[in-house]
Image (cartoon, rainbow, N blue to C red):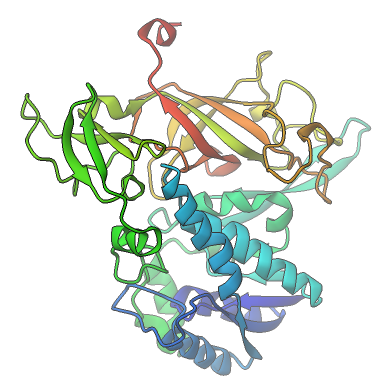
Length: 422
């Protein structure tokens, strides 16, 4: 199989490429140049896509004896990931750039280009597993579906940020690190193979904000927009330089003029971009037990709608919804957050959910028959409430280790006590 190995210059992608070579695939390495500043260098564990990283990736490819190329995807990265990051914050939402990068760069731009060049799959250093399973069809036949599962390495699991890619794109992806239970094992594997990146620090935070100053980055791009910080009664308690630089659940950096009357800490409970206002309040206002999501994506073999899906999809017995479309699962709203029990169902979106001019009732299924039409997602938490869930975050639905679906949070709230009692 012809495999394109995405090589970031880190230890994970280097070992993934090595394992793809060892498996007998015809492997070509490629480094994605995502930064417009080719002269930037990493600062310890901050930043990526620098000349240093490209050099580390080349040395790993040379050691493995595979061809190596650098693809300039910086313009696409700026137009999708960075632009989305800015517009979401400007709209008072909280984006996850890693989710958008996986969606638009690694499993759209990179994968589509690889397919056009005749590659069968793309191998990456993500910590996740893909498993295949056969499901019965109404005519007595069977067909194979591919499932995305958590990595056994809980600390590094990346199924949350991969869920947005969907079943059809993940069908052309390889995750050679899926069986590793710890990062130490991966580093030991790299050292055993003589890869010089075996001790290289992991990158973290937002890759295009190398100094870690997200507020400074936003202000440099969006400019200063002074406004008021108010409490839940509407009384002005402080000032800010731009509502876009605040997110629901934030406690630090609020710049409040005086403490709350009860002496308790205050948090951002709402961001109102139309009035450039930041609303702060007590911690209890951050607890939510109801979430709705937009642009939901359900994985192949999952029946999460009260009406049949397009195509001959028969759900596994453990994901059959009740007559109202609800089924039991777990949901996760942060990359390394703990999953919580919930009831989940899908609902029809209003009009053109993707904004591409295609009515949802006319959107065709994807090439492999999986259900990729946009839907809304409704979630009722059945255990403890979650705190600080913000519009713009990704919510991923799990059953055990298996990913069932994903959506972008559009609203989160606390249901009245009468509703919770039902």
